[in-house]
Structures are given as structure tokens and as C-alpha cells.
Image (tube, rainbow, N blue to C red; front, side):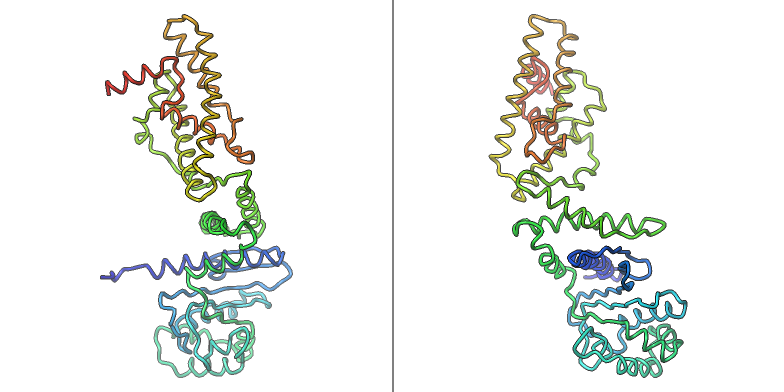
Length: 394
């Protein structure tokens, strides 16, 4: 049973607002225009293009796509109230364009139908019907909007409505993805478009949060969006791999890794706690990215097997050299010091890359930790024997 306090509709409305803003921004990039995007400032969404009119967008999302946009619709009058009050306050530039975007549908002959971009557009009829509703309706919920509308002169009303466009029957929050697929269809290979959208939206929502938290509400620049698309596109090339910020920024739980074998390997040679924590972070990032690359089809299992074999071969060269240098050395302090030098190589070395264009150090370092966890590599000369005893005791 739904709760009286269910905020699903409101939450979807805010997500729809941000998601549609991204779609609109991506479409605008195709026009080679430089613009800014602001959310929850002058209006739900504001587009500002140098040398062009400022565009304000009110976004209305409904779970029921059959919702009608009648002459007394709250969606219509809430938007008009905001815009009318802005006219009275002198808030809008003279060339501002007002958009009402809604998943609802305008009935033929309604105000909203007369304010569509094309077909049935008739500003005078729209104004006449709005005048009639504002003067005769007894709706208390729309009363403030009616008052704001009637406070304008007839000329002001017609000027406002002349710059108002209703975009009804808009796709809902799920349907917006279809538009995104079309807008980004040529950005990457066809089968990569869903992953591009996922990563672009991940960046976008984080960027919108920073925008909303900014005290000055500085807008998102079109250059930022273009840069992010270019960055993701470059990572999708066959010579590269995508690096995901949601994995890089995630905090790890030290306790969750404390009993892992790769951690025990570091304890055998007295690695400091901060370096152990760094190893946990590298392990986590490598594990999560490798899993995601396999799941999303950027790698095949054989690619990782071949890469791990290269890492093991490189480790063997350094490990065997350490053992030779130690010779018959029996002092544990000297042995552990040599093992720490070997581990230092693993921390610094990032030359054995998985893909030529993907040079993130954690890929190599974390993959070595994965191999250490499987006991395919180690740092102490007797790591196999020591681990066996340690794990048996545990």
C-alpha cells in the first residue's frame, strides 16, 4: 500500500528535470553553439547562449502519460505564475523564451494546444481563454497564479504568451534515454552507446550536484560537457579502457580487507599501515574495473589471463634476482628489507599496461595485488611457506 508520504513522483520529477537538461544540452552541442546550463536558478532549467535569447524551461513529469493539460491545469498555471511574477519584477531579459515541457497531453482547442511550437499555435486565442479562466475560476490552488496573470496588462500577457512554447507529450524519464541514444548514436560504436550514456549521466548528475551546492550557482558550461564526451569517447577506443569516477571516489572499508591474503603478504614484510591501505585501494579499484570491463565487453577473459601472465613473468625476474642477491643470508631483518625493496618495485612500476592508452597506475599495481591474493606472486622469499603456516594458525 503506498504511503501518504510517498515522494516517488517528486523524486522522479527532479531526476527527469536533470536528465532532460542533459539530453537538451547534448542536442545543442550538435549545433556547435557555446552555451551554459543552470538548474533551479531562474527556472527549472535555464539555457543561455551568447547572442541568443535566454531560454527558461519548466519541466513537468507525470507517472500517468495520459494526463491532460487542461486550461485550469496546475502545471500550466504554476509555470505561468513564475513567469508572470518575473515579468512584473523585471526579472527576464526582453528576448527570454519560456518553455513548458510536460509528459502530459494538451487537448485540441485548449490553451496549451494554442501555445505549441507549430500546428495549432494561436497566441490570441490562448490569451483569451486564459483571461476567461483567471477571471471566472474559483480554484483556490491556482488563485495566486490567476492574480499574477491578471496583474499584467493585456499587452504584457500577449508578449509573454508570444514567447511561450508548450512541449507536450514529451517522453517520460525512461523515454528520455531513447532520445539520448539518438543524440549520441554517432559518438561511439553502436554497441557502446549504452555504456557511453551510463558514464555520461554519472558525470552529469555529479556535476549538477556540485552546481546546486555552489553558493553562486555558477552554470555548467557546454565546454565541460563536450570535454567529458570526448574523454569517454577516447577511453572507448580499442587501445584504451574507460576509467570510472564512481569507483575511484569510493571509500573502502579497511576491516573488510584485513583478512585478505594480499594484506597478509604485506604484514609478512612489515609494510607500514598507510602503504597497506594504499594497497587495499589499488586492489579494490583494479578488481572493480576489471570486473566492469569484462561485464561491459571491453575485455575478454583471455585478455586478462594474458596480462596476468606478463605480470607474473616480470615479477619472477625481480623475485629471482632478490633471492640470488640474498644468497645464504639468514638474518630475518635483511630478508625483510630485501622483500620491501621488491615490493617497492611493485608500487612504482606501471610500465606493463593492459592497454596502450590506459596508463592508470592502479591497473598494474592493483592487478599485482590480485595476483598476490591468489599467491601467484609474493614479496618474502619464503612467502609460500610463511603464508601456509600463518593461514593454518588462523
